[in-house]
Length: 324
Image (cartoon, rainbow, N blue to C red):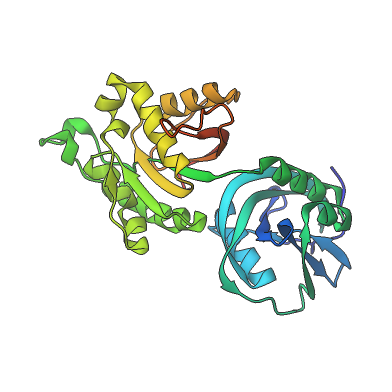
């Protein structure tokens, strides 16, 4: 794609690498339905979705939230990753690819837009009207993906616990095996990532390493971690269907939840959820410290009698170990 070729400054860092950026579709529930934010950049006289280049050491999720705050003045809670868009921009050596990762992002809390040198005007618009105003086709593709994601009722951040050292080197009960030093670094990286999604509940397999992985997030929220034995390997393997139902019950509550589990659970659990929803996933990875962003929508197949889960997987996105 070669659209939008003049909307970025010439870059001076490593020309062998693509420029990495991130952005989001910031949305809210308006009086006449869903509304999204568009920003006007006076330098280019265009209307676009908020986005910007990653700072050193940032993940795409970090950059998306930061850019929304810098360009719009609003705070947000991320939802599912939407699209990765690629195009070319001018560079000192000619042209260079730019890769932008987009998320959904729901308006959260306060904030107020203030015109600045980068963005001088902001509009909240219904999706159809925003589609007509956007200046670039790739932004319209992202907005189309956002529209297709509606309506979603819940996000579950399914986390594999951070590193805990070798089981063979732990003399005690494996239930109590704690995080290693490298695992603590992964935990800290997850602590900077998970709150970006605005979780309101935290669940864990009853394993010390799982609880330690998500404890900082729970502490920030001022809540206790809810233990669920069905997310531990032994209980899950004895009754996988019960484990799937447990996660669907969490999703049916709505909002955003963190669930920390183990490598013997996550690939099978995600696969079963995807198969039930008719989603075709590639290889279901589960590295320590990684996160599956699972998006759910109401299950039209549910009977509505309150006897079972009423959520169905709509999309699944894998975020690798947040440490480089």
